Image 1 (cartoon, rainbow, N blue to C red):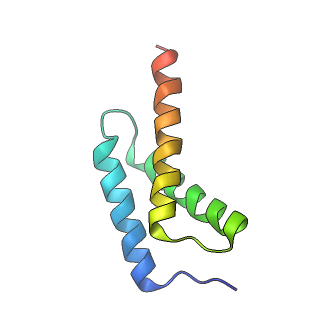
Image 2: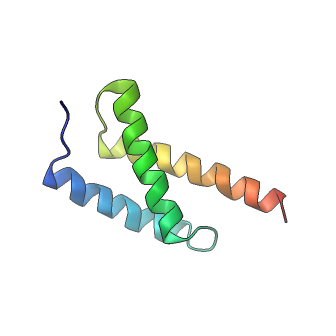
Length: 74
C-alpha cells in the first residue's frame, strides 16, 4: 500500500503554490488543487507511485488544456 510521506505532502503543497502562481490569470486555486490531486491519484493508478515531479508535469498539462478550452469558449 502506498502512503504519502510528510515530505511528499510538503512537495505537493509547493506544487500547488507554484501552479497557482503560474496559472493565476486563468484558474482559481481550488481548480489547481483539484488538478494536482487528480494527477497524484492518476499517477498512483497507472504507475503505482506518484513522485512529485511527475505529479507536477501531469497537473500542468491538465491546467494548460483547461486554459485552452476556456480561451476557445470566449
